[in-house]
Length: 357
Image (cartoon, rainbow, N blue to C red; front, side):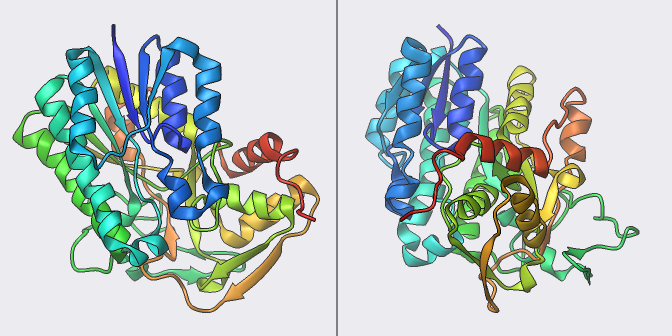
């Protein structure tokens, strides 16, 4: 028996990882206790996604409603499967800047402590298994905001001659900048994954994601940018913009493209690898541009509200470079761009996201 162990299996990337690796013929064990509902409220619950996984995959999927902070419970799962674990995909996290400020202990315990629990259990019970860790571009803090942007009609943008025009690379420093509490906890996890790779010669990879997205996102205001744009549009909710005139830029990568990168690493793992992984120049948008795309797709107007103050540590512009990953895994190719992503989110949710009376 070969097992893929997925933390955060009810979330966007976690649930897609379950389906993807089950499709490769592995038995999948998912760990998720629906903390997203605690973080963001009932509408962000991932329980529906977990139920759907069970219905779709049957005996190929085993769900463990565990908290990744629980050392004894996590150890019991890893001990049960032992060296049958062929890969660990760690997607569980507290994902919000805003929420982290309210409860820094929980944020750090989940993001840093939970990651350490995963790594130590792999070391003790299945050391040959590659560990795929979902990090974030927020480990760079607000360093990207120091780049020389020009204000265009619908976005902030770099000059074509700038070294980072095609995307920010992994050589950007993570030091001496403002990270946010969330960013700091993710830095701790990011570095620990690298350290276990180097110190214990484990096969580990850190994927520093941009905006990870797709139709399985449980969209809510504090997390899930493109899905929440489409949800607000369809439900005719007010979308609140914070700072930068709504021209801040995000690259967006579809869960399908993320999982194909995960599979590539699984098949040819390395030790202590670090890659930016996002939409890059292939798939990026400003907030204003995303609104216009959503309106074209649905035929409904966006209802928006602008707040001058930006969120602490928020990026003015983020387009990451996938060049390092593509150099090591040249067969990996992106499929989705932003209009395709929003179209798919629309089609998956148009009957579910309706205006509330």
